[in-house]
Length: 465
Image (cartoon, rainbow, N blue to C red; front, side):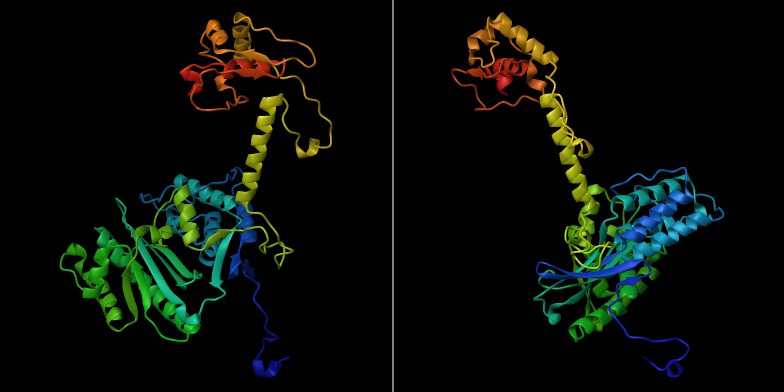
């Protein structure tokens, strides 16, 4: 123990590995060739959803695939901030800054509308909470390869901007450490509205690059020196070629009305390049990891951007909030559970179509359920009538002999333009083109067997397509 008189009024004990801090749970585990550390806030997300349901008792939260659908760029009258809105925005901001960069853009737009709150803001807040409910099993993952050398780690800063049709653009940047063997460690990120209105894509990209460098330069250089033990410039990656050339030159005579503001920013970037503190490079837009912070993305795009930002779903065998090790905290992701439920629904539907009786539910699995005879459908009745017109007789014995149906008999019965092709329980086997002699064998004296015989015995091109 430490002497309290020498250390002051606070008692200082033994230090240990950090596991819990203000709603965050830190887990460390091994995933194949990578050593991983995750920031898990699943319990905090459940707290947010519960708080929203308590503050908005008449609103039902529905899972959503995207974080936002409207950027809320229109102007409205200023109103008095509501306490419940301020509470939700504060909780969402803390979640975004700690473990969920995928909601940074959505919460940035909502945060700027607290004093101008309206019904559209209410709808976007509900949508965002629904997205968190849908992705509550996702968390931030930092991966380091076992064979990665410290000198191969480099600090990289990706910046991006979204130029809207009206209003001010949105700036987004992501600072991370990356190695040659696939190591990826997200360090810091941000999404905020630009201070001045940009009149071109080039202007918005310059402002975004300047903002990212100003806020992440010190942290990036410090992290790189701490990991590698050597000094190296921070790699600034942008997806605009004009920014790449003007940042090295430091001035642009065609900036228009914003020439002074842009030239000052470009001058700072040029000086940092000259002194060896940053290096400006070009990155393809699809590989820019800061796209997540500048615009509303669709379902497929946000899944790709989440992976680029280091956000992954909980996999089987990984530690979760229910335990401190992979053995005690085994959990399945929400995606895995949805896939299993979808497969079970398909199996029950197929069983119901074949036998008229779905698979038993888990509560009914111990009960003995009888299978009734399948009811004849409209298509099956038409098949039976067509076979009767073709003078096909079937035996009703317990073990009937196979019945052969030839194409001539089917043609005599008429073309089955409305036959059983649309039924889900029939599947055609054999070649795709009609053979010279198409023969079908009915193995059961039932309506299903009649329909199969009629369908497989037809050699017309329409049925074989």
